[in-house]
Image (cartoon, rainbow, N blue to C red; front, side, top):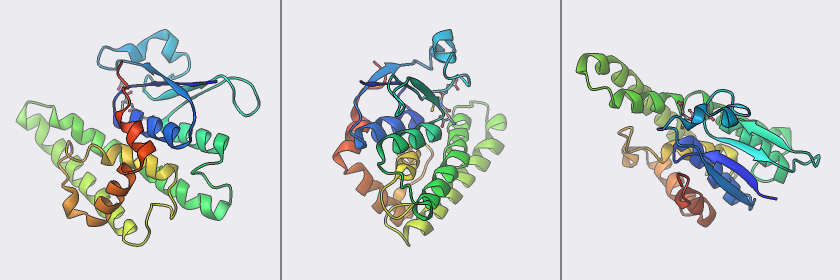
Length: 209
Ligand SMILES: N[C@@H](CCC(=O)N[C@@H](CS)C(=O)NCC(=O)O)C(=O)O
């Protein structure tokens, strides 16, 4: 049975379409137009109480019963646990996946997300401090990623759900004014991830129709 992916064409949304493709899980897209406020519809809020995409509805969890999951990090862990793919069960291998997934959820998402917000503020005085702060913090995070990827091919060694999470935001590097040429290890990783046919499908499938 197909998983329902409630989503929109955004970095957090793309994380999950790419993961579903990579895990060969059948899914149907349920578009939630966040620019029209559809994330506040009671039907969506009933299982995504923070009024944010993405969220999923899986009619058949591993125990055979239906389940819903919101928050992209939780969804990635759920899907990895369900399939046994990109989410190692061995604690030593799982720990770096969790570290880099949490690094994304806590920083490499919220910081560029704030930069995107301040880029839209028209009043220069209102914009300057926030934009400067979040662009700087975003660049710092790219530096952290670049140093990590100088040591390992993918964030946790092998391709994992952490890569799917981080890729969602790296996909918007132009929007937050980052030139990947300045972060050559990130660029090498980004190009390798985007060359994966299933990931590519996750980034091209329509999420807004
Ligand atoms: N921590 C959440 C963040 C989700 C999030 O911020 N989603 C945005 C789109 S990328 C959203 O739904 N925004 C709607 C709103 O702000 O009302 C996750 O990773 O799932």
